[in-house]
Amino acid sequence: MKTINPDIDPNEVVISIRDLYKSFGNNHVLRGVDVDVHKGENVVVLGRSGTGKSVLIKIIVGLLQQDAGTVNVLGQEVDQLSNAELRELRLKVGFSFQSSALYDSMTVGENLAFPLKRNNKRLSKEQIDKMVDIVLDAVGLTQTINQYPSELSGGQRKRIGIGRTLILRPQIMLYDEPTAGLDPITCTEINNLINEVQRRFNTSSIIITHDLTCAKETGDRIAVMQEGKFVSQGSFDEVFRTDNDLIKEFYQYNFIQ
Image 1 (tube, one colour):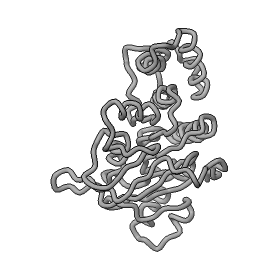
Image 2 (image 1 turned 90 degrees about the horizontal axis):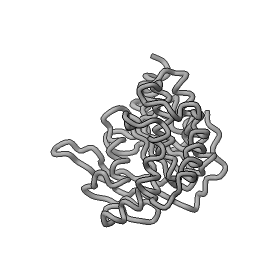
Image 3 (image 1 turned 90 degrees about the vertical axis):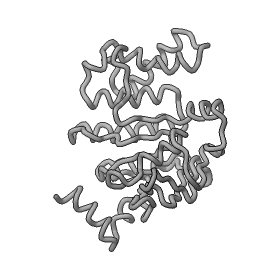
């Protein structure tokens, strides 16, 4: 069980979502989502596959637009931003994709340097190299700098993907199924890394998962999504100390079967 981050600022909200709706044709995915994320907080969005978790974080970064409701990120209404303003906001919001999204033709070092070269033309090679070294140290993979993604394990690729997101020093991290497809030992390493990123870089995070161990180990607060809305929020123990049969079934599926 994670120890709650003592540096969470309950008076500063970095993400505020109210009455959010999103449908694709007759498929009503989000049906009135309300949630806040405070500065320094890891919020785990927990739910079964297909419940709208990934749609939620795509709306947060403007990859999708909601049908109704508001999404405020770092004081800005996302759907009201111009393309230039949206690009600026995305530099402050790191999106760790489930697939890691690394470029196969680039070494690890080149993959990490790429966002810096693309977004900050004024950095010298020495400055870029130093930032790459810092991030590789943070994810524990300094020895892989000259390797290609195809030479890495699934867990290592996941770490480098998180590192590439971190290199722009975002204020917010969005993790999409960070432990999907990984063995239990590697899952533990990724969970520890998420907590280390929060501590070392003072990030606020939303962690999308259906993995209860990930939720238990990384979440300062758990928000359970069912049928397109949050049905319970609180600490891990608060959420699962419940008479809600659907939540109990979800717990039993993860930890008993």
